[in-house]
Amino acid sequence: MGIKGRDIITTHSLSKEDIEYILSSSEKMQKLLEDGKSHELLRGKILATLFFEPSTRTRLSFESAMNRLGGSVIGFSEASNTSVKKGETLADTIRTVDQYCDVIAMRHPIEGSAELAAQFAKAPIINGGDGAHAHPTQTLLDLYTIKKEMGKIEGLKIALTGDLKYSRTAHSLSYSLAMLGAELVFASPEQLKMTEDFTSDLKRDFGVNIEEKTQLEDVISDVDVLYVTRIQGERFPEPAEYEKVKGLFKVDLELLKKAKEDMMIMHPLPRVDEIHPSVDKTKHARYFEQAFYGIPTRMALIAGVLGVEV
Ligand code: NCD
Image (cartoon, rainbow, N blue to C red; front, side, top):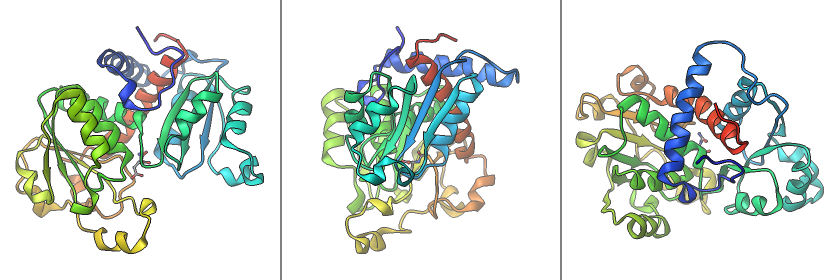
């Protein structure tokens, strides 16, 4: 059992048992956090955070998680300050950093970069997002949020909405949700539908039937969780295409009149305009709690890959 020594690159490689292990370890980590004492579980261990793409929550929660467990952090949040600027390859950067740390969390704009890094590092690589492909640690904190806030995952009707073509959060989350027995609904503008690659994986591996809609109004009344994503403007090959879809999907108080009493709204954040700020005060909003859950989940993940039991 456990995830000692493993790279965490996509959710495809996380079994039900792996996920249960990480969620129960996250629960223990949350208790450690709540008792307010300092902890030394990872004293002497070093996490490197290599962020080649912007990040607020992912990088800072990885660093906070490592600090909370008594470990240390090195890294960069701006590749232009590193030898990448001089033309160094990702493989050489990774081979070097590997000698300075025990575990590496990285984010990179190119799909497949985390997988490539894993081939050159002895230390476990944790993928903090590779282009539009995958974001497995976000999925783990999303699953933990659903479990904590709704009490279960199996049997819930969960709508993934917004930009399903380019959102790596939606790609990774849909796989684990299908595996854990949630009922999936996809709602996105026609141009931003989940690509065939991802839906065919879900159908092949889990035989699921997925409802696909093009309006939030079509899904709002019967879902338990509304997972909202940002339109990923920076990933559109043509800016004109982004102009056509930006602002199309918006959650506001009017829409919420049709929602179930205990429906929960999630968002990996950052948001732009897809959730109106007036929604923040409603009982449905849980996206800032979700951001908090990134800490216990990443504490569990780092300790897990380093083989340290809580
Ligand atoms: C997401 C990401 O980077 O994919 N953010 C995050 O990690 N919480 C979502 C996004 O950028 O829209």
